[in-house]
Image (cartoon, rainbow, N blue to C red; front, side, top):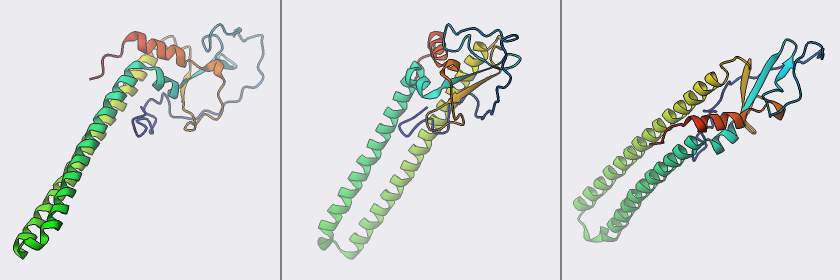
Length: 205
């Protein structure tokens, strides 16, 4: 998923992270039962002799149209905004306290000034620890979400390809893919999106 910082930078919805170099040679019509496609990929996936079939899923499109992903991504982004606002608010409060100490510095004894400085340093350290804790918790939620989505996609594709019609189903992402060229005749993204949405992904909580 792409999160606010690109939830899927590591290819969390990757179907197979591999590059396949294929050479389709000596293609004949005698033993090839492929016919003109009636849909994008269903009848146009024979890519080599012997009926070797491949397909691909466009992850950008999947993320844009898979309702569960959009819902959960929105929740994660909202949590990140809330976390950022919380930390910024505490940082502003600490800055105000520091500025107030500077204004009052001439009225304080050395002992009072040193005590106030120690208090500010303690609060700053606590804020830094809180920020680390919140960011770690968010990263853990993001990781679990990515793993959950990967499992949803894996499980769906196992059922989708139960008849073994495809030998490989690859993932494709613009500017971040091992696939250098794709023929849209082998695109099964629309079928995958519809199937995953129809099957019901559950409500993101």
